[in-house]
Amino acid sequence: MSSLLMMALAGCGPAVPTQGAGATPAPPLAPATATRAPVLPRSMPFTVNADEPARPVKRAAVAYLEALFTFGAGEGSLAAGRERMAALKLPAGPVTRAAGLLDDDAAGAIQVVYPQLGGLTADRASIMAVVRLSRQRGAELVTRTRTVDVRLAKRAEGWTVTGLASLGGTAPRDATSGTPARRVLASGRIVLPDSARWDVQAGRIDDRVLRMLLRLSREHRISVAVLASGHPAKVFGSMSTSNHTRGRAVDIWAIDGRRVAAHARGKGPNPARTLMETAIRYGADEVGGPWAFRGAFTNTVHQDHLHIGFKRP
Image (tube, rainbow, N blue to C red; front, side, top):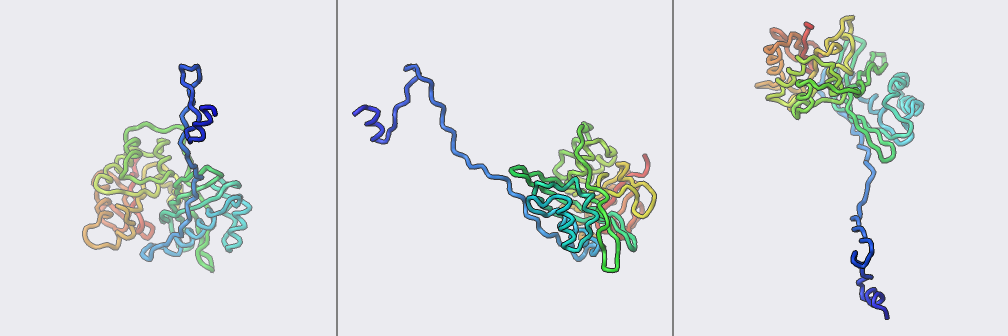
């Protein structure tokens, strides 16, 4: 019996010739690895808290977005989107505006982060919804957080969505390198949706706003709803250009992980009011929130966020 056969029967296997014998060394065996396709996040229904202002408006906007952007593989086309909304007896017209966020060959999921008021009259409204949108095509999964401007009108049957005025912008080709911008983007205490992050990267935001964000975040973690992209271009219900459009304002919807609407009803020292006072002290001349005091204004729209801006160029 040959020596190789005897070794094989003994469970040793054949010996590998050494380099000295003129053979090429065998490459080491790669460890076995199991690859898994990314899992599309599950869309969890968002509950509009009872203490939120304009609750029926927010609920209508949330329901529409969740229905539009939750779909299985092959159900992301415009036609499928219209069918989906019609089946739920929701308006199909606004679906066309969402084409940039739909995909014929993908599956989609949405998580509403927060629906903030962008404007409100007796029969019209804007909801700037911060949403986390995921799309999966095969093994590719892409998730972006956008601020979407949802427009609604009051009908006999209640509030209904009439359009999507903004999908929250796009990533810029060239990123800015200004110091305040870099610090804001790197901060772990300033939570930005991608829409706002893109605004900063594109150089659209006034340095005064960026420095204010850095100052306000020294003591608190602040969650931004919108800078420029995703906000109505005009002050809602007027012809006046919004300072958001000019890059001179920011809306903050949560402080230390707690909604401004909840802070507004809290007792004792209030970080939301403190931030309003701090903003005024450091030069902001357009400050709105749940309270009116010297240098600050309030109304129904500003019960759920802090607006901090600069009127002068």
